[in-house]
Length: 69
Image (cartoon, rainbow, N blue to C red; front, top):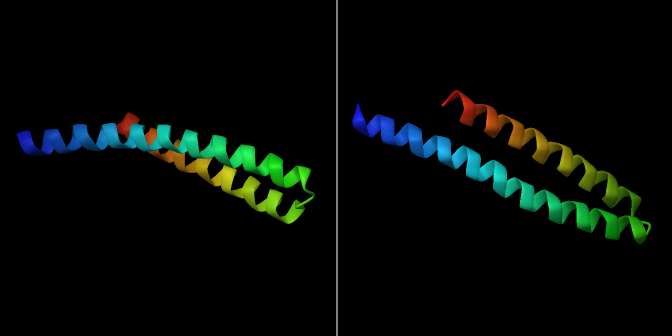
């Protein structure tokens, strides 16, 4: 039982860490999306916007898992 509790605690911390780490990736995506926009690369902008939406959703799932743990 003690090992399970340690695993649950570790998983909870990892979920929070991964969500926080996603934030740093999102900042980079936003920066480069703006650069692509300034270069008129609209299809790249669209794809980066989709990636940003997906990373937000991923973080949402990770934080929900963290809360449930």
